Length: 377
Image 1 (cartoon, rainbow, N blue to C red):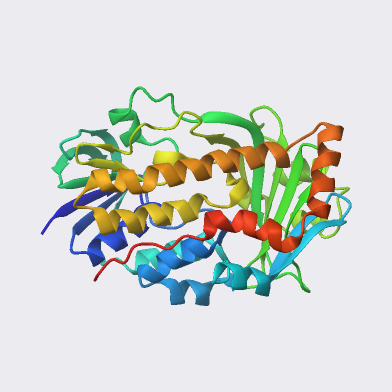
Image 2 (cartoon, helix red, strand yellow):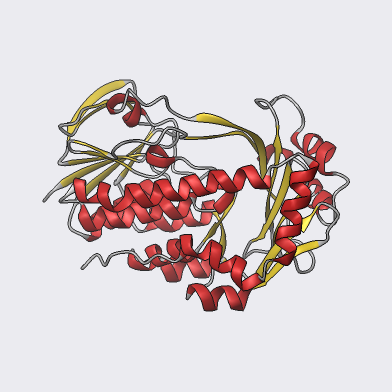
């Protein structure tokens, strides 16, 4: 049986482990964190991500644990709609509904699909070589293991990428800081999936299955100050925005709010493969969140890897052009949504108002309208 070591137990790494096992590989996952308890807030699985989960045999479980996107759109900071899209139209164009889900729920579904003992926590990878050898520290002891395939799925600060792609400068600051949170309790009343734009500011909401609401707040600025109360920091910038923005922030436990300095791989990798080692997800193509494709692209990587794992070069040919294009477009959209110049903001908003909803959706849908290869299990 062919062996694989997956470095990183996030969504992409666990997805790759599930896919590789389905295609006959013996898989070990090395996760740096001390436990498998998931961290994070929420995300939206678009049509491409849901099709990948269907191919992994997990689509039904994810739909049961998430909330289908009933539609939404884009608003100004005072609440006026720039564009609205009905959820039925989205499903019609894309062939399947997008699903809003808490990362912890998705992470749990992926973990449950793997046999006990597959994931080793507290394992810090200290080195990797192109022949498939990995060194890591676990419980204070250095270990060396060899596998037929090593998958670097260890995120934006990938140790595998640093070891085998030392010429890449790594992640660069985008110039945007973001807070992410989930309300403590279910939200009373209906709420739309929506993004609201200001001048150099952006606020998004995604309702979850249990009635709570995932939200994010992004502003242009320098590296974040981490010692300020996060609720106070967000309300200082968004307290005057339309309902329910201030109330959502105030309904969130400050201890659960994540505060990040957005970064991405501005210098694309010339290959995702070095010998018997491949990169996947943020380790390969960390992108800004503006297309909502980060987790979806990682799931695409996972399924394509499982389908082509006997030929890493084919994985590179199949995944690198598409994922890097999605990353470029996401970066470009990020510059538009974070625009602060009043003339640019006015032109952006005017364009959104006059663009027909179906045309706007089709423009975005071409990045989610993707079908994974069959795993042939």
